Length: 390
Image 1 (spheres, rainbow, N blue to C red):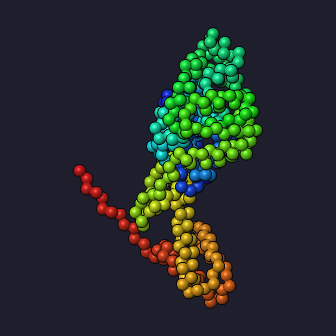
Image 2 (image 1 turned 180 degrees about the horizontal axis):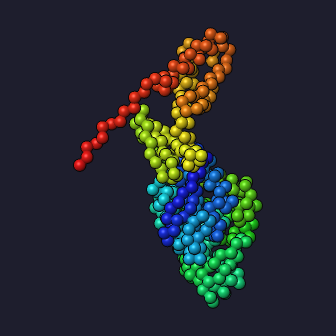
């Protein structure tokens, strides 16, 4: 798994900071994760679930809403509606880079936000709520006695989860006018409701209200024993595992690349500073630079890929020769490392009941693989003629 930092404009124009969790192999689907109220992209639940999903082939973008974490703007000027707008902007960023999200995931108030945003993101096919309130006004009880001060003065500082936040009267007015029941009834997406019966912050009765308001296809999964913030690693892993298996019914597995055999195409993803999408015939992979060179280390570097090509070609060539000559070769391992600017050290390990003569011949053949010969011989790289201008 790899992750890269992303930055994109939010609904109010402020820069929003996020993390894109990428699978090590092909991307089967893309998801967008909305964190809980006053939390952030690096909350325990957001980070762990995103990483678990990435391990299962799902690329996940989690980001800080306006005024939170590393994102710009003032939290006091935000509302539930602006948060929904931020989600739509995040989906737009994904659409322009690796592909629009087919899965929307929301934790706590983030769950209410993805329910509200779903019909504004046409590519979304599945929605998942985790410990979500059925009504956005549920948040009011978190404000306690400060609610009266907000209504009287227009703004008040409220301590939530040990941190101070300024809440304006506009926020209260906005959450009171949201019609979540109508939105859920008109969702027109597959819905998975996940909730812990022991949730003391958002009672499990909210899950029943969401489930009853939704139309099929819909599912409910009890997170028995989990707390609201999913602070136990096993609970977060369970959520991710069930979520990935459930969503598989409603998403299209990423198609194979349709590149021309023998042709390699490389283009920027713009999901990171140097990240590249590499298409090799019908195969895809991600390339990047290590952090020491200013990249995000989301994939192998160019020289790593060069060594990988040499190693793979060497191993395949040795195996082909051994099989053709009926040499009892059991296993081939090729280890390569860079030494200086213009030297590569290649170590060939051969196992099997081999004679010294057979070992010597296999080592000789290893240096005759096509990639080895191309790298050690004059190699011409042509550039097609420039297209006519004007």
